[in-house]
Figure 1 (cartoon, one colour):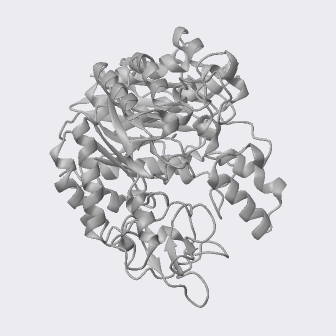
Figure 2 (figure 1 turned 90 degrees about the vertical axis):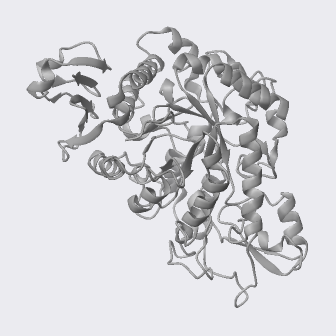
Figure 3 (figure 1 turned 45 degrees about the vertical axis):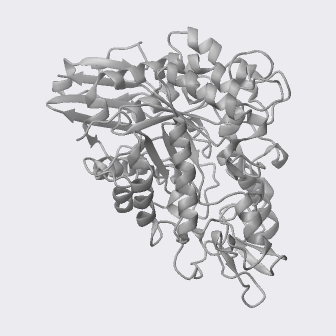
Length: 554
């Protein structure tokens, strides 16, 4: 297996709006990120993945871009960005940008030209279609509720938007679109950035003819039909030839609806497309049958089955991204651990142990290293997230769900849970801002904050720091082969890793009660690399609630 820096790195995702505010306007910014680089160096991460900082009207918090080569006013200036990049590099930290090129903002100059007339040279940069029988051109629903088509009076036609109406989809079948995107990417690479995380990149090639899709509910067809389209690999290989292969950078694709077989193409070891992909099967396991909204816990046996499929399926042929948290996912302690005061920290450490000992590149989402938890939403007015608000009104007003039944489900899975401001200390607004924060701070910040955890030896922060150190020390953690043990146990996640005759045993108890487990004899004399409890002997055969440990045998 070929060794590379991005396989051996740990990535930290920053959601700039919620990370650190340097000027008191209540919105995180680039200078705020620069001020926290020493905190990240202390944690030990290698790469920052920066959610979008480009110019944007902010209909979807920066994922609707009006200028790919300018910085959002609220976040600062390009000079601020250049200084942050230089300061990060001076600390040995790389910067990976979010690349959002399935769609633009409807305020992007390309779209403004495209919508102006049917014969404009930019018309074919987007998908324009006539209506059908007085309705939309097809039955596709948007990922953000409602139709995926918006009527535009200017030319009496509809345009396609798989997300918000303010996010029209680019037509990648047009070579001019691809050239403009590739030229823009090249200019960022020349600036010195270290790679791209590619937003919904599996959606860029739409099915020929844009046919109706199978219904995903009684209102609309499933827009998942646009994933892994007929030319997606062709376009990514072209991107690789013309841009990516010319730089020593890291690439990861957000690939909605990806299968294992498709992932082997996207992240193939020959390096003709991307370095790795995000697959989302595992983070969908706690959804309801009809949709993702639910109050269920993540079931461990299906989770083990799914992660094992990806660990073994990509071993030697592609590369895994390891994550539970990001800006689109609720906090994992609520989903897989226990957010109560008694078990929050130990369960956060158990989850981290389980993930960080697998083969692949781990991603830490801001606040995950503190064990941050979901926000206590009370009403729909507490939401900022477009997806959550739209889903609530569509499900209650159009589909007749009882608000008392649906609100807790949306509150539990809302993307806003990940977007509440970073909890730096116990001063007002958690030290995030001296102004009024754009989104409410979780009221538990006086108990859960970075200042307290950095100096406490047994904190979640220092546990993550140790996990990252171990990955940098032991090749087996990065490259070792994975094998699941006790597949059907609903509470224990136990697996081994092996490389060049060395072995690891990873033991995690995902329950709030004791369990019996004795390591096999070959591990009983091994070295304990890390454990999240120190109040018992591993060889007494008893696992405490949420106990986790890792044993290494040379």
